View (spheres, rainbow, N blue to C red):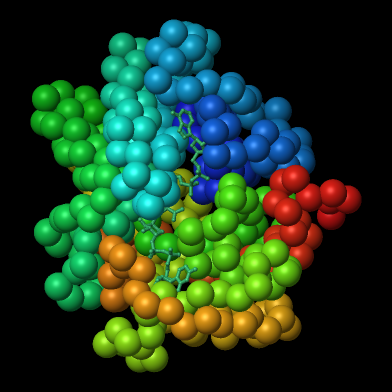
Length: 347
Ligand code: NAD
Ligand code: WQD
């Protein structure tokens, strides 16, 4: 019998790609999302891509902090596991509105965990972030590295990781996997779903994509005097479809009786600079990306990339795609949907 999975934040960037992979893998999926940072068009597109399997997907516009509404979702379906993406993620906004972040991310998660426990569903996969490594003393980052948070957003990830560890210590029925994502980019190869940030993008590739389609005049490069190959920041970019598949590997791992509360990095293990990423995107798109060199962005770190050993050995998962495919699929999505899900004359 196929398994029922609740996906919180399933209309968002990572959520929508993961929901599609889950459906294609034979799971039945219920999405809850308040659509604060996403569009229901993403869910419709996932349904189109899933074809026949779309019958196994249902969507509820619910805020995780709405205990009653969440309770109704759990009363309707017995879930085998929950993948918890729902949360706010803009680093800069979190500095200006810390209470909004603590309320949404922490209260949302606690309400979810309480509702799960009340319904006897104690299997969880949680979206953590490489942000918890702060400015690492060395790279690649292994899961055992000391953790640090540079902003309220990062602190919500640290707190939730700790909450999950405490929960498992209090009750051995809980099985929890904390996934630390590095930098997810790209889109589904169909160009039907992708990242659609509201307002001016904070992250590199959504910004580059908007320069390519003429919505922004130039990319501001934040710092070119780091001790890196070309002076610009180095990150571990991971194709969104690889990341989505990592969640299926994590779900499978939850049925391992030895699992308690375990942490895994999801990255490629390769570091790429801003200028290398721009060059790869220019090649994939045939578009010139004008650059403006600027000072370092406050809070930025120099070099971060993942050790992928633990995920490879224990989850039996490894990223398949490189930056060429990431840029190709990012451009395919951007050129088909220059205004994201609000684009006219779609595809
Ligand atoms: P996203 O904003 O596209 O998706 C998050 C979804 O959660 C959105 O659809 C939003 O409407 C929903 N949501 C937020 N608060 C909610 C609430 N209280 N109740 C119900 N729904 C709510 O972001 P994403 O990039 O898909 O990220 C998903 C998760 O992964 C987040 O927890 C994020 O912090 C984490 N993460 C993202 C990145 C990244 O670079 N994208 C990196 C590391 C970790
Ligand atoms: C990548 C590189 C920038 C924009 C952030 C969060 C992190 C995680 C992923 C959620 C850096 C440079 C960027 C621009 C630039 N999210 N850059 N010009 O900072 O690694 O991580 O997203 O958990 O928590 O902090 O990603 O894409 O913003 O930046 O030069 O307009 O691109 O300085 O070197 P980052 P990013």
